[in-house]
Amino acid sequence: MSTITVTENRDILNQDARTFYERAKELDAIKDAEAEAVKRERNSPFSRWTQYNLEHTKEIMWLQLKHPKAAAILSFLTDQMDDHNAVMCSYKVLEEVLSVSGETIRRNIKILKDNGFIAILKSGTSNVYAINDSIFWKSWGNKKQYSRFPANIILSLSEQEERYRISITKHKEITKE
Image 1 (cartoon, rainbow, N blue to C red):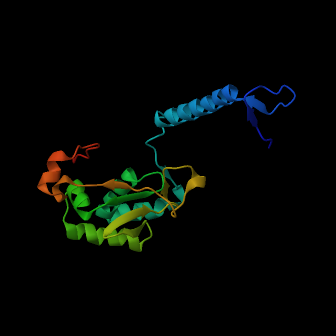
Image 2 (tube, rainbow, N blue to C red; image 1 turned 135 degrees about the horizontal axis):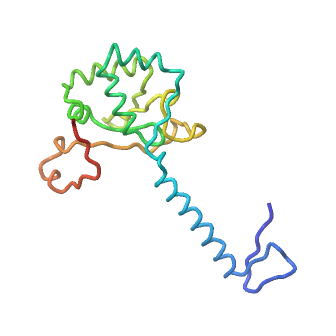
């Protein structure tokens, strides 16, 4: 890799020399290309896709047949997870979305954890659910990591103090059918 030299005046003998103006134009072109790539990725028909490893079909079928509520929780978490397979939400959110009791949520989260579908990481008193990336993932296969991630945090307005319920703007509303 060669070193670029940036100077006030063009050095025609050095092919790696740039003027400040030329270098600024190069950097602007790089920035524009990166912004265009992000825009293409955001507008891609694959932006809401989750990949699924078919080697785990038997386990998923077992879960759906034997523990349908756990399968529903896994579907919700998988839908909401970020590109690093993580999502943070309370039991209350899961209760409201799935219209089930807190005890049902606790029991089925344990089934998911005990059978290796999810890992539960702690962030203070909150749970961060990391979906098993050998089964589901949203990012490229070579980017599957548990060590670093920004989690999607799902909040329920009903859990918040009244004064906050009024001021919170809903960015994404999840509706029950």
